[in-house]
Amino acid sequence: MFKYFIQRLQRRLRKPAKAASPLRREPPDQDLSGSVTHVAGREKSPGQDSQKRQPESCGTRPLLSERKRGANDWCVDQFEVPRVEDRTRFHDLGLPVNIMHAIADLGFRYCTAIQAEILPKTLSGRDAMGKAQTGTGKSAAFLINIYTRLLNMPVRGKRRTGLPRALVLVPTRELALQIEKDARAVGKYTNIRIQPIFGGLGYDKQSQALRGKVIDIVVATPGRLLDFLRQGIVRFHGLEILVIDEADRMLDMGFIPDVRRIVRSASSKQRRQTMLFGATLTPEVESLAKQWTQDHVLVDIERDKVAADSVTQMVYIVTSNEKFALLLNLIVAQGLDRVLVFVNRRDQTRYLAGRLRRYRINCSI
Image (cartoon, rainbow, N blue to C red):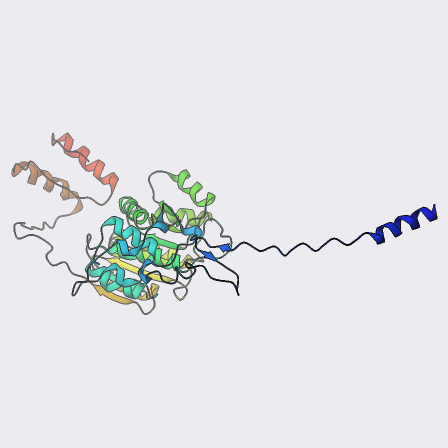
């Protein structure tokens, strides 16, 4: 047996060694844009540096996590806006290509007065307080700032639910829904998630949304948000941006105590950016701004003309109990056929419409 193993070993040693296989040539690497690049020391393909020669206005390609609905196929060069003296283009603000694409879709060419004044400062990280009427573009101003800052400072690693990065506080449900709609239009080419929070309906749906997925931006009325805050459904100790819209109306409607509790639960003013907006800047609003902001910039934008010359404005000083009688007498005595009445809340709208119908005044909400 031993002799048998010796013979097998000798036959194996006599076998010629196999020739070494030729070195395999690695195929060239290919980047996401389709251009071919070779390893160092080999010949470069003609398109290797094509990305470097791209015009600067096209920006960088969005990250995979930020690509949405063909945003990476669009270039700022496709959105041509000529330079005009004393007008600020959105091109001049250094916005991400995702945001510029959405702005082009919305047809925004030049900044409004408040956007031109406030965006260069808030994009650099400054706190701000702005006085501007409805319709001046203030919502777009703070939304563009929010999206730009969130895109430029992405969070690394896994995030937990109930910890939004930005909060927009508003006085009414209608305004919350309008800002949500505007936000989705500005952020349509990003994966930033937004969630409206307001009272009156959708309690379970809103609660599940906060518990079930990571939310980046919350647009909320104070009452419902404070309820979720007390339950621990939402927390703001890591808040990066706080916007308080229509702060003067918040004060008039008695929401400031709720807003104070929400702000106290948020990260310190040194660690977040804070912006306040209102149609009027009362001493009370200015006091709040000093408490909640640091070194804020003040932007005061007045409309060129608030009312047309053909509009006659009259003010009646009456008590709350006399308001309905005055309104009814004005409609009946003057034989008014078309009247537009504004009230603060939806429940007040329904109540007023019901009372007018009892007096055979045809009205709708």
